[in-house]
Length: 456
Image (cartoon, rainbow, N blue to C red; front, side, top):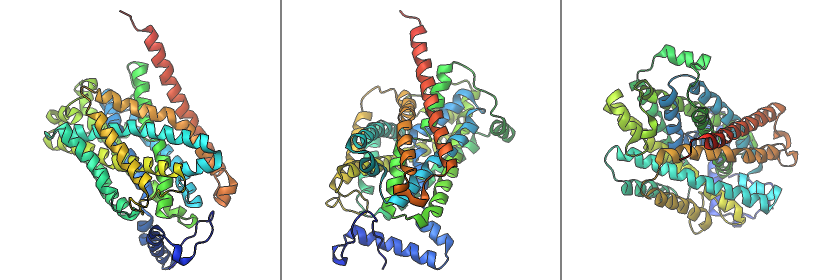
């Protein structure tokens, strides 16, 4: 049996291998056998996971509600092709993250600590934890809103959301955690069925995708809020932490980079299709002139869609929200656990380890889910506002994370021949600049609107 050695550590004696080493070596032996026997389909299946989970995990509750808010506010037009372009940008970013994890066998947070020192490491981890907590609050909101459609109380919904994280973290096996989460993530395709019930005009959809028209009307603040929210729905800091750490936890190596790109590409296509479907599904609300700002509580969009597209479509929208929140609960809490485990250095931070072997990792995974659940139970919370602003927060905090990523992926000392290409750098810099521009424009317009608004 071949056991992969970490290139930055000394070789271990055979009797010093941990259960984590042994479990991962079993996974790697299957990969090597598939590669040796030329079984490309099996090889892709074995290496599939981090990319698909990252992209479909980012199609979370606030993201799907952001896409739906775009469709309900502006109908078909600018935001439909914008979602596609935003996911293309997400692929560029996540491919770098995957490649970095496969080459270095280190998580994103761990590399920042090692290459830039404790100050920047703790700053990055602290930002991630705060952002993830806010985002997890919105995931619990999505589950709560979806379950309320079926008459399930907020308390039961929160318990189910937290219990999902607790149960799924106890398997002591990354591959088991990954496959269970991927199985759940496939239900993101429910939004395709909802879009079908919305009966969109194929011609109008094609025209919007090809021409980016009709252009949005209304206030600049509203447009920029949805613009930054949609950016934050596709490119966020937790994705970097999760995919890079998951790639390392899975045991990806430089030879696996082609399959890693296919994995990330497949996740990108699926997430873009379902994200567009969520927008299309909410277009009937635009046609009926329904104000989405009134959909903050109760069953929200699903309840509003029921009399327009019928009970089956509304039911699938509610189930889709539950699924979106559930998958994101698992992946985002995992990214927090990876970051905290890596920050403490020398402690376990893998799903291949039990609670006793990786106490910080599993405790962080569960604790942040519990904290988010408790916060959601605070009465009279402005659910839709929290959801949209959570994505905006991710947009604001993304540029520093991208700068670190670009510096790391261009470091020949750690990347060797897998260093970023000039095209990768060009797209990476462009994406970072556009995200900064969108966040800055929204901040300026919000400030101007605040000072110019009538005062009583």
